[in-house]
Figure: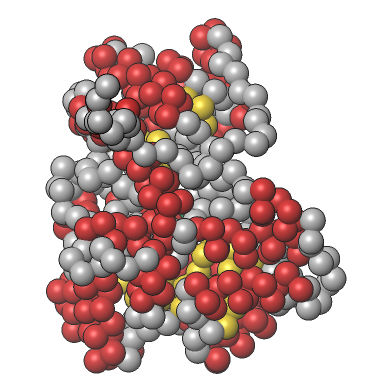
Length: 471
Ligand SMILES: *Cc1c(COP(=O)(O)O)cnc(C)c1O
């Protein structure tokens, strides 16, 4: 007989794993089609993963937009949809969830994020004004330009360097912003366009210290700050993990504190808010609110639904409360990190540190024999699909589009392929299969010759452009 206490498995083997704070109640079958069928599918899609049929995809990492699994509570909420044209009960739930979680005063619902970007751009930009931002986002910048604004990138230099381990690569470079203010004058700046976990930089966060300093600088000149809140819960997780003084704060507390330094936000609820469709604009200024509320009835729908069904608004309201649960967001970001760290361990070039919603492959380093106008990231996304049925997305020269003045390609420093992880959808085994597929494509990298563009749409060309392989 021994009086030793029974050991847990973890103590015996010296490791303790974490696991998702949910279990699966309903499944959706997926299948891997044959290599031959994949060759035909990608050819028919013009080597653009956006043009593949979802049925031909095995593991779909195209985007985390609208691809989340909703919870049983959200589905139950869908049954409580109040589909009244005006004054739906679900709108008031949504308004309350945004006010208490993000802290903004006035809410305008929209059909998705770009609807809100359209409204804020039309309301807050006068033609010819500058819009400084911490790196561009495709739809955001386009709406700013369509409203007559001129986007200026004021993100720190580290954001453009995929190897920099800076913990807050999304930060605004206040010296760059100050220089712009000095050059053009504060009255010619519409607002600062600030994004949390900067998508195009690899899902990189902004620190609390940075947003606080930004507020101070903008206060000196009466410049507003509007936040792209699309992935702010993930940004809050990085602050909790990395920024001194925030380890004992909850995600909810960090998020509210961060938003308090800004004047409003637009939101793609299809991301952090854990729904399949929806968006909103939230501001503190009554005048801006009234203008946006006037415009929303032209472009989206009445101001108490903005293009969403009542049931959709209910799902967003519940999703907002689930989004700030610490266990949820930790599992979310750690799953992304699990995939990223596997790839780093295997020597695959990825953007570091691993971001909040996706692992970004550095296509420039991956295919160091391909010049940027042979579309290395577009090529890599196509090769990954061919190898394994895994669907990823180009975030490089195709996404960057053309300069509206010169008509030339913009040549972004970052030429990336994004492996975007939907929330609460895939398991660790899917991450392992994905990592092995990337490795197989990496081993075959010298046999790849690049692509040429054979069809180019005028707006947001990455969605619909078509390509052919180079000989
Ligand atoms: C997705 C996204 C948007 C646009 O939102 P949609 O819901 O797709 O219209 C805006 N900003 C960022 C950072 C995004 O990721």
